[in-house]
Image (cartoon, rainbow, N blue to C red; front, side):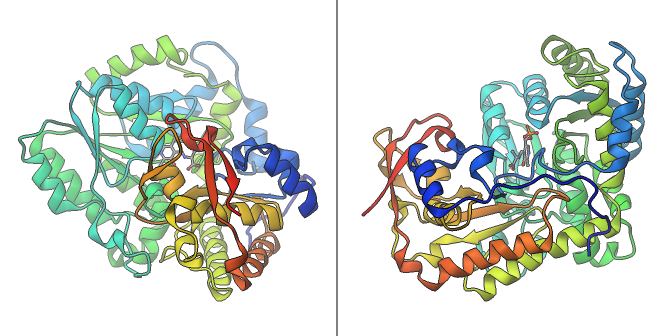
Length: 452
Ligand code: F0G
């Protein structure tokens, strides 16, 4: 059960199918055009959507808004230093700011950034810095149904080959957990070996630590050597295997806004600090208020509480199990922050160019007011400006991201029941066709229509 009780509640909109049909059509069948009043259960993102604890609220009240050298900064730095062990801690307003600053300082034009999987903002920031991304997920990641424990790992053989030249590698970025790869964890053994390879070749090894605590939890559950460790001990060890990190604290900081950039190299830190001060804010606040810094610091302490992590992982698994029983498969084994539904398998009658993932996301909204994110050909496929799909995504997935401490099991049961209703008559669900297909940031800006 949840190791907390509810002190503040917020009503959620309960709407009719008729209302939702109208609102969704008005927004060109793009869920980013829906507003809060249209949505009953919002599983679009687990980022910045968590519930604050009483201690976080209290920490917010203690927030010190001194421009330079605030007490809030000192508290944030102490927690981050103790957790990561890095010499230089820079606060930023969210993860992508850390990415922009670090890659700008670290990558020379044409250099490779290698990752188990770059998240989309991460990819964009590598490219903006003039770098070239390469994803090297482990081979097990290709089989959605296998129960291999660490499908988030990087492919070490391919990594060693890439590091051996002749290409110029600027950095290796390990995303924990692997959000672009089904929310799967990375083992400590994989982090250790990747770190060793990077040291051997003199290439900086950086963690994208958005979900560092959830990765640590899964390590304690799935990696023999760490069974007796606490999630916090595992997380501390993971950070210490890398040369630095970029981290969104909107996930495992359980904050509404916040992030950090941390490195050991003093020259790199100086360069990043300069960019931080020019674009985010002075080095002791980096675009955050004192209140935010204090709430992030408290969140970074709470998030490794084993009872919290155990319940969160169990709730996500419960949703995946209910969905599977109802006939909707998801990427196995279930991770912590999201369930990745296999829409391609549920809708064999919808071809990739009619976007089965979007069909499932749409039906979840129309049938239940549930919002989620397509991770299939609409998002990852190669599409012309006229809306023609040139090459599909490898899988047609839909991500149900679970906000932290927000929804109860009965909310998740409602989601599962809605899915069960869809799975009873999957052939009734239509495909969609793009009517507007901007090339840049397509998922946020495109419009679609139902295929009759
Ligand atoms: N890295 C990963 C692995 C992420 O999942 C995200 C954000 C970021 C970096 C960027 O962090 O949003 O604080 O700038 N992921 C959110 C999501 C948006 O819904 O998965 P940010």
